Image 1: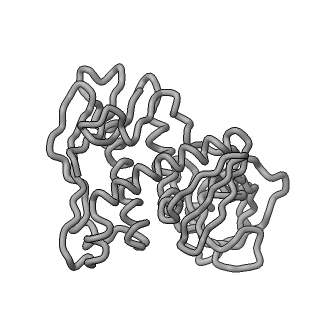
Image 2 (image 1 turned 45 degrees about the vertical axis):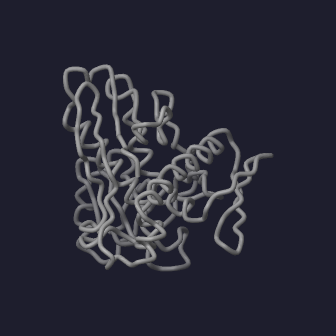
Image 3 (image 1 turned 135 degrees about the vertical axis):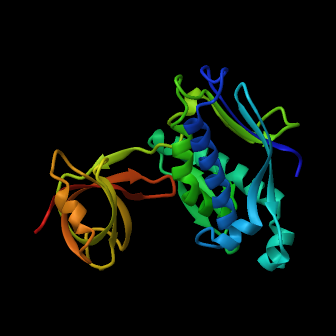
Length: 282
């Protein structure tokens, strides 16, 4: 790979970069590249052994804005010869770049009220139709896009006058960065949502809860319910006492009354964006 750089810039960064801004931006960038590794390797998560073999190595950090030079390190044949030879650092970055372009395209489409449709061929590649336009993507890029969308949403959300006006990454020698987000891209990866009118009853397990934000995560493991089996984010609706929700984590199963917020998915159809919990049954 040629020498690479990751940069964040903003009007208030000339005298130094607030540490929490730098850490958040770098963390989301690391997670975005991680998702490319996961998509290519077929792994579900980054293990300790994975991290020993695959990581982003920074070689220099400059001030004014925050500018860091980096390499993607991929070491050790124990990781598997096919991955090392076919999916080296250049391929991981190529997948990252292609995923960025893919997500910007399909997210812009749903924001404009269009619904991308996907047709996969025998090799796993996809033909994505948006209106009269046809785009072709590698199937791995689409899988990475599903994994990395939330990280791009977090990263782009940092783009505002008080924080950042540029987030970019790419080759030092290139005049155009592979990844570039400006102030107009703050909501580039957001998708439209709608709240269903009727409350549903949901049998689930609450496994995470933040008492300060009154939000958490739950797991649905039984079939024949209003939502498919899986894990979902939820928030408490209104000004409810959160004590019952804190204690609910001690129980294997609880029953929650919820309003479902659906998102128009850039990957086709609709998906559950958030569950608004209106009550918990004793």
